[in-house]
Image (tube, rainbow, N blue to C red):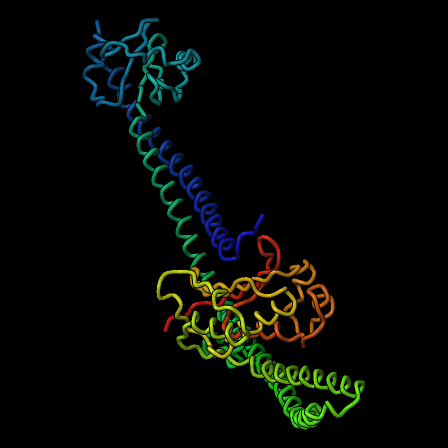
Length: 452
């Protein structure tokens, strides 16, 4: 399973942390508020019960008290009820709506024993509080106060607290996203600079003024790039100097060999064969020097200009005595105009065709096309293909051993495909080798498309 990215993990962590904190605070706030409201409501109910009980007790002292009328005279409102139990008989101001049955025997027993008591009950599915007060040895008074409004208030409170918890979690996720984006900005800067360097732009640097807190990282990165640039420049200059120094004696040798070849008819067979071998090796040596010079220059950024790739590919085929029909342009009309470095792209095509001719039994197709945001070049050959192990090293420099042998020959400098990879990298692209359907190899170069 693929692990989630750092950005997503930090954002999720902030969201979970904010949700946990807000939920805890909401539960604590709800419990405290609920207990406080319940206690206050019970106190209010107790005060009202004692007041009503005193009124009822005063009227019961009459000779023939009307208990029902006395209860009706009380100002009870909509959420309160009062009942009296006298000599085992219940009295209420209205028809009994389950109030007397909601009063538990335990509560009645305590009140009848002369002990004021209170109990929370449920009447027709609604919470209520019952306060029982003894009025005499045969008479008890019960005040029933509905908690429906309080329940509604608590439901609204729970809904508000839940909404606040969700909003807090979303805000935490947003904060995590912003903080991660802000804190990872220096890493993105380093990544962008590293990508530019990998494409061959050794002038890429980090600005120390952008993130003062990361001045040490910025300084170390820039120093590393400076050292890398100096080393690359030394290597490039060394390769260029060596190649230039080799050119003069090679030209002299080539001129001398050409003189010998013109007089070949005057030489014996063994000497003529030796001259031919020396000529072939000098030609190969000249190609090696030219390739080294090309590699020495290839670390520079590509200079992109509009190029008609179909025309260029056909021109490269003609220069190698290959049929122009090999070139296949894929995509809509007008897609053959690419913004690439003409010299480098021409050499990419040439090297791939040469590689197919030398080691792949000859090229069978050259496809040019556009995909989403990139150009691609595909060259198919009819050879034995490339083994899995060779695919890992075939684009390295001077790779000729197993790869050259397995692909049909040992001639070449071992730098052709390395130059292809270098030119693709200079464009910010890449090159890969695949198995062609039906046999053979398919070399594919991908170059990111850029806008003018």
